[in-house]
Image (cartoon, rainbow, N blue to C red; front, top):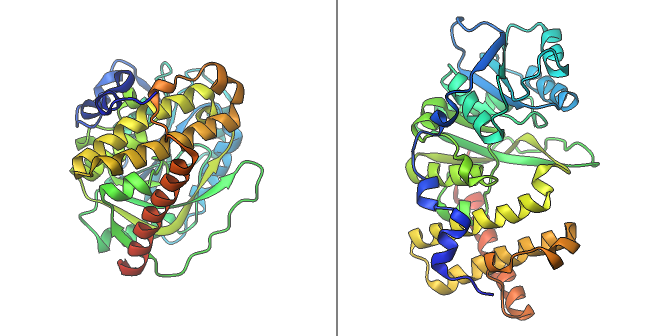
Length: 353
């Protein structure tokens, strides 16, 4: 079944314009207090705060924290841990206490507010000029902070700076940082975010006031709330990408691989892609190519991971599938070619720093 263009924009209650507005998403859970467990709240704020949304993964959190403590050539930072498990004296609380570090401020939400709201809570708790959200299983390379502080001197008007993630697949070897000294630095545009860069919020270097001005992350666009925020930032702020591996994104069997979550990705992503292409004035045939390619790619992924549910439960009305295998293959080649062109253009014509 082919879904109409207008249906794609408002599919399943997703109102793209509302999700991309700069409304105050911080106020939604204002009634939930973050209980201050430890750390100095009155000391002079450092330049950078690394905000970690934690929830019952202390073994992974240990590696994340160590990657922060291993930072070189820059030490004007603090760590804010917002624990979404209200239970007192759990393993995470005991671990944070064992560190005895004056760099850490540790909080527990008095009740669970969810992943997206916890990202926003960290922004609220931040007192620094810059904030880095870092998932409690991801890692920073030792030069992460020093490199981004260097970039703030080159592009002082930047509100958001992405860098290239090194992906650590579950069960695989930890990726070793391999970069030339000078890498491309360029401002991101809507075609980039549409075709190439769907960056998660983790490992992103941001001006705290800019995130607040943008309204934070919209939880009604879950599980694509990071993608929606990135588009909102590009439309309302200065967003850059430094094409250098500066953090490790751990990819494993987690909530994002569940059937319901994968289906919800489709429900949220397709209307957003359609919105972007309309904003850029792309002709209908180009819109169809991109939407059909995204639909067939995600349906294929769901079929690989949840074949029975794809056969028995999947709602085909939420996708726009190509009419033949030839059209599917052509769509894939065209979108791949355009993505490679964008990457080639940036890597050959952007300044290297």
